[in-house]
Image (cartoon, rainbow, N blue to C red; front, side, top):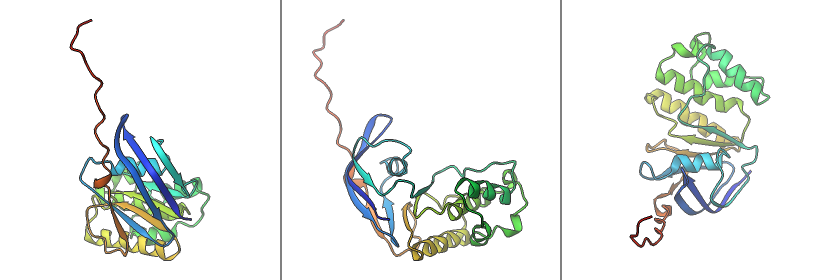
Amino acid sequence: MTLTVTDLSITRGGVPVLEGLDFELEPGKALILRGPNGIGKTTLLRTLAGLQPPLAGTIAGAEDTVAYAGHSDGLKPTLSVVENLRFWASVFGARDIQAALDAYGLNDLAERHAGNLSAGQKRRLGLSRLLVTGRPIWMLDEPTVSLDRNAVAMFADAVRRHLGQGGSALIATHIDLGLDGEVLDVGPYKAKPQPIDDFDGGFL
């Protein structure tokens, strides 16, 4: 499934942040989002994932194909690692969670409550959810936050396997993951300031 974005404009809090975006994300490909903090990368990902409507433009190919991982790990702290994965697997109609446990080195933590994990372990568990969604398009917002070098390598390997199976990934990150993908710098698409209506200086 190819994700096609045409003349897309998006807002944050009602204020335009990016405009005129055009790109395609094809199966087997990764696209790395770059740009300064606050420019709208998170807002773009949320819009593409269907969590908020665009201001203008079209998004084709995202319907029921996107798995989104934002800043929150989406974990239930009173459930164990295995129970969290089983919960998410049931949401998406999956059965096998072993591949997710293996990919992020979670087998030794399988029975530990998520609330007792370190920040890095929680992040690994949060990212492992992607493997039970069955969704071909992954959208990831700064996925390596709280990860050490070994865990970053686990994540990069998981993405490579996903791409090798015909999936695709759109990733907002400032680090080099060693992926064979293109870079989309959203800086040139920053929305122009909106004109302020004329004000005659009078008083009510």
